[in-house]
Length: 202
Image 1 (cartoon, helix red, strand yellow):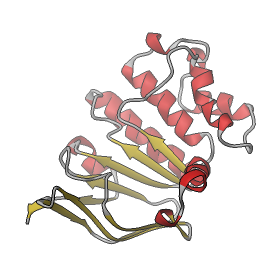
Image 2: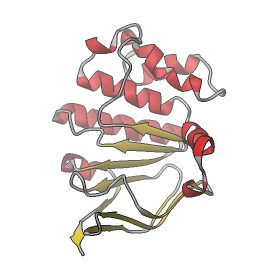
Image 3: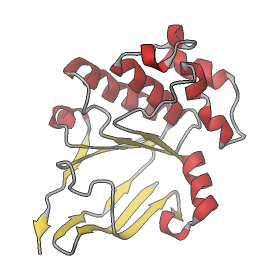
């Protein structure tokens, strides 16, 4: 499902990070550990292939559409729209895909334990609840790949554990590959495969 080749990050010609080649099948999970600013999510060289499609060969609208249909992203900060309700935030991908049904919003509200919050405003949510909304929004298109960028960094131990379990559980239900990138060592033993990035000066 995912093949990563010769991936490299460099900053101002002094800091260089080489990422080991990765092959990840459907339903598998991977944790990428590295300190903040170590280049976990900003590669400058190499190739990333998802389900036979090279992402670096796609440009503009084609890349946006591919991401929208195949990749679900969970950010450290949920980036939710405050004027919208929880259900409306989860349904935002409707604007980028035409293969959804409204029932899916209700499904993920239930799956993530926030059905009673569907009409709530974002400002009334706890950090853990807001992160669940972000996860639901990332999953609603049925992505082939789930990318979680620092999903637990701002959460306490219990909510961090719950978020990782939710991500793993939903990835298995979708048959999606799951990649978590983080500096949060609390979750290292919760993901089967892991790699640690170390920077080196040139």
